[in-house]
Image (cartoon, rainbow, N blue to C red; front, side, top):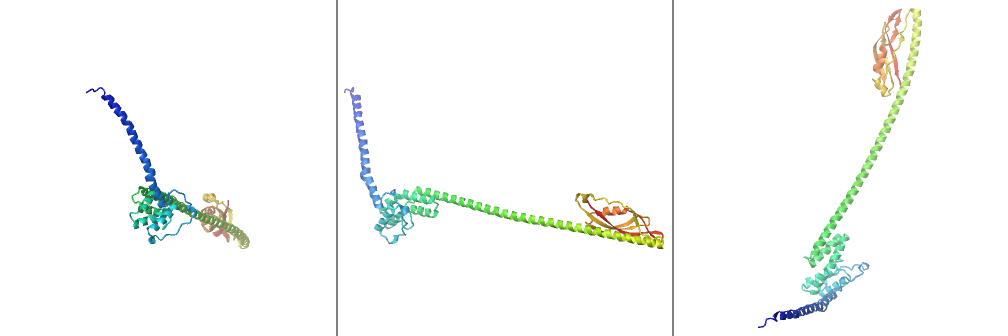
Length: 347
């Protein structure tokens, strides 16, 4: 056998196979396109026609009032399908409650579990109905969104879209709860701030009133002290005048009866102003009682009255203890006598 022509023959055979493969692929593609237009698309159009048209067809639902709930229990399959088509035309996939396409189709499947029109319509319109539920979630109508999700779950309980919708619903609820809690916390903080401000104002007013009352009391006390000091000075002058009169009368009678006189001050020592009182800018007076001994010195020095108490007492007693007198005379003999002296402390 001559084998020289075998490779050439094989090349010619392979070259002839390639156009055949291309032709087969082209035929298959044409058959697929023809099947789409002749079988699949007409079937979908039929389903959509039975369901009331394509779900994406715009309907002016916002301008139409929501229909009342339908008597689903009293309808037969044909009536339910008719109501479902009407609801689909108006894009009432899941709402309103009691009158929506999914409700009608689900009721059809309850009456006729093998109804292909209802099952196909639910499957085809599921994405659009899910969009409706998502819009309810975004508008934060959570109860309505939950109702629509439950209705979708009856149609296709295993659809993954339900998981997404439930997650979004849960997230939106948590977000709303956080916002409400934040608003409540802010309102509470504002109330606490207002209460604190009111309490601070009451405390400030009370403190101001107490300070004003204390200032008024201090002014009244100062006025009383001034009046008491003035009264004491007048009393001292009157006492001094009476003492002088008595001394003059005693002298005259002594001269008449023979050397009977009262004690006469020879040396008065100024009282030392207490350092603490000087720093506090305090003033006052002390009435001291003492005995003028026969030698002209003083003893038994006592404080009878003072204002203020125990502030100038020691200074007044120290001063009186250094006084020197001409002792009182009785019948020409020096005798002890008792005297009182008011000492003023002024700045």
